[in-house]
Length: 220
Image (tube, rainbow, N blue to C red):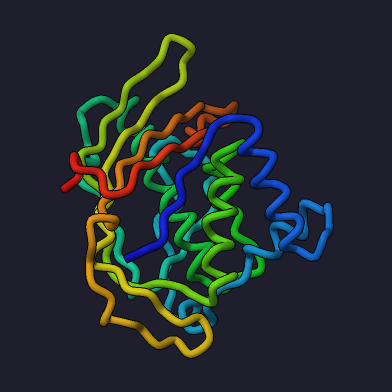
């Protein structure tokens, strides 16, 4: 019951996304303006937010991600037994949480968003987040992520594919906080994602591109 967007990796699509963000920010060409546009979120959600772990075994200084208690993200298959794959999955998971934080949590900044996304994936995330604000919406409920698989390319990058089940989430009015539980689940709540990640100098696996398919039969 969440709105999804399909990310194109072509340069033309990236340019269009940038233009959309800038025009929606009153024509400002400042990157800070774009960040400010997606920075705010539901004040009520902020009040009940609790931090997710920010210290990892790799000793990387990670930004804290705070999600309210009414947001539950369930990630299945977190441990593969392969330390490198597990690190990729962990940062992929943190990226998902950072996007949800930017949607539902009221804060001046959301540093985790840029910590775990860059390039086309960052623009995609910003466009997705902004769509909630443009429609005066947030969301609540449980989202399940499953069938997660990691593969490595010869250039050192990683690919993470996974399914998302958003059938147990509900739209929430950003102004009133009212949750619409009358919305029925549909096939579009099942989405297949194919993501590319690159490890930066600090050792963080950042998502660089994302493609998605709604109503994915393989996820039902």
